[in-house]
Length: 100
Image (cartoon, rainbow, N blue to C red; front, side, top):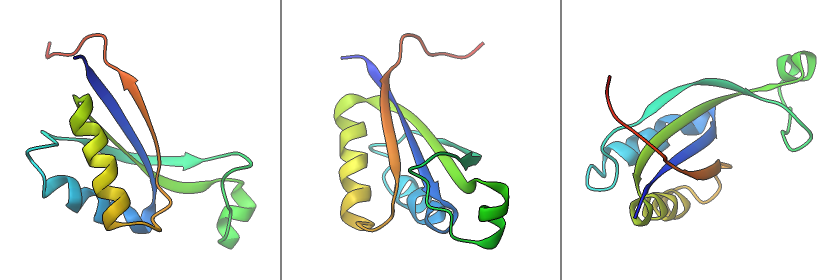
């Protein structure tokens, strides 16, 4: 079974909670990468005055790679621990992975 790339887009105030969950489960998540991104589009709720002016909302993107069952378990873990977290996600098959 190929590995999957799990991408999570979280509001700033939720990111640390998600990262703590991932760090608490080394059996599911070998490691992850996170960084600042901006959410754009009709599905993004702009709340703060700065967001309304800029037209985007700050988010944190977290990405990890692992076996499909583990990535689904991570999603279930987040849904159970943070049911109102407003985390957007997607899964993609990984064609190749390694170090250079």
